[in-house]
Image (cartoon, rainbow, N blue to C red):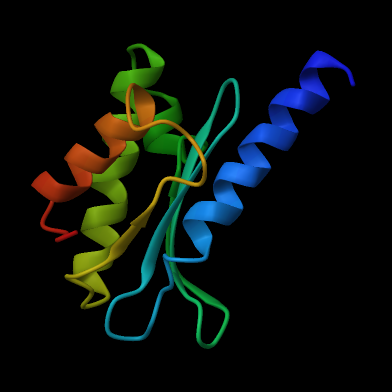
Length: 120
């Protein structure tokens, strides 16, 4: 098995392990994080209906034009998703780290979302 496919397979197994316990409802939707090598994305999802309620990413114009490293950009995405969630009336969420370790960009996004008013 190639190294990349091993890494992807490992993260997929971790993701399945996490997702069997983390489920978003209408009262507490799921805050899902996806990161690529360059970008980071956050979505608030109602799994019962299968709808994305709020989304933010590092590709949005005001975030993409900002200066700083990827951790600082992740912090801006967390602030943006918290701002959009409060406008949509969402206060409580379940955090889905999507198989990624809770450090670096994932941690800064989560902490910024907490500072922005989301509770999880």
